[in-house]
Image 1 (cartoon, rainbow, N blue to C red):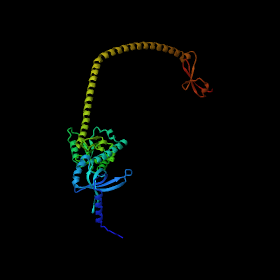
Image 2: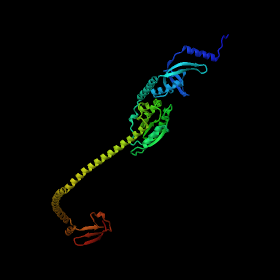
Image 3: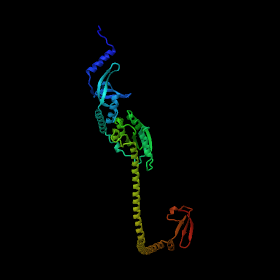
Image 4: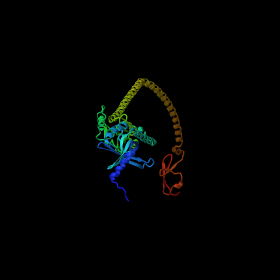
Length: 410
């Protein structure tokens, strides 16, 4: 049998009174923010604790920081940590419990210790840096070189950022008249969308024909740098095939993105100055090389002209010596030729006389005078009677006259 009944309000009031009685103190609690938003000057947070091994949530709670406290806590926290409260951040909160009959339970935040968050942020940064170094990509950008004529620039920035305009104006108004071509790839440069927005811009640039990439952020709050301290963005930048110049922070703010980039400068105008100075160094080097080449050529021409002048003066003398030597050689050669020709003529004359004697001895007319005759058939001397046929006409040549005959038999 039911002895006592409570209305919901009565039961909730009992819970409130129990909490106020049993937990009157303030407590420092470590937690991770899963959500953080402002409304009407108040800050509303969702707290979470995850299992260290599985990352599974094992505790959740709501927390509130009323405007009268938040107006003091927020600027101090952001000034100290360099970042605003955001989802994923580890915090150390000073809280007390509050249960309201109509709105339920929540922790009321009286203070936030920024040094705890700084320590956690530093730990995360070191973990990311260690991973990048273990992967061997931390210094990859440093190994790239800006092209000599680095004038086609891909710019990642917010289209409305004052820093983007300053960057373009600085390039356009350079004192040397250098011509630069820039193309903007718009991206979110503050808030939670920074990481993916810049990665998307890099993907659009990847297959394009640029000399380098410039990531600039002029005009953003220095307290909103967390988007540049992520592993995914750092890996994309570190592995990018073009040199990346960053101008997103100030003197005391160096993000992981700055660390892995090719060159980090303070501001967008400093990035423009870097590109201008780089081109000026190239121009000065070319002018210096041109002067050195001109000087070298002039020295060589002077030496060659001197050598030619010396040779020119020596040519008449050398020619006279050579001419005398050649004339002497020609005279000796002519004398030798005449002697050789005379000897050859005598030798050939003697040989001709011997041939003439032999020819005279073989002269057929001499044989005819001795009583011999020659029989001719068809213009050839007959040496074999079997070559003749009855009826052939032959001619017999004698010392005096010829006789023609007809063959009757052979």
